[in-house]
Image (cartoon, rainbow, N blue to C red; front, side, top):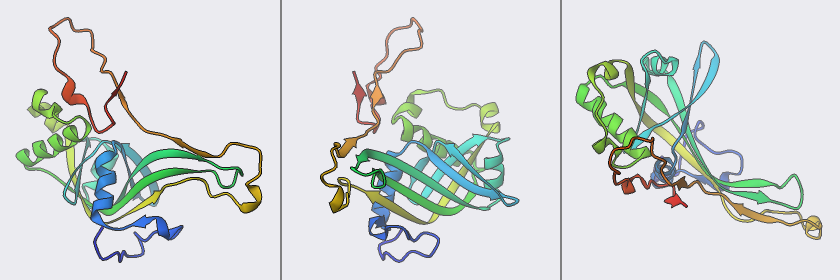
Length: 220
């Protein structure tokens, strides 16, 4: 995750290296657009990969979960971890089964996590996570009370190194398959938020326009 494009072996993209991106801007763009991160770690030689919400600030990812969570407990001990975020941009439909693919953007970050214990720092981290998912929501929602904070662990995952991998464009069929009688091309894929559905509370309507997240707006 640097400008010198010189990753170590753990972050270097080996398969189709021409799709690799090692600069911080490319990695951050993917992290900022994604909603779910998959956190990988190993305990007693048993690997685990857990999906979770997150938020990014600079070279840090904030994670949160139940105080009883195995992931929170293990990561807070400082074990090595890997965080991945993937965005799917299209289904690549080729003339041969072998060359079918996806257009995608993925980021893989390596590092270690620290338990955030300072009260104000914990609230800040939680606000970053909340506003990553729904910008502005933290401002309006009731803040966590003491009991809720006691039941929640908040981690700061420091990105030591990261890489991105990106595929774009049409299928890459073999010359001998170009006359095969089947449609080929790309089916674009994007995630959009639909119109918010109220919970049925009869109170006066609220302005929820700020809930238009980075998902491309609401879809009627």
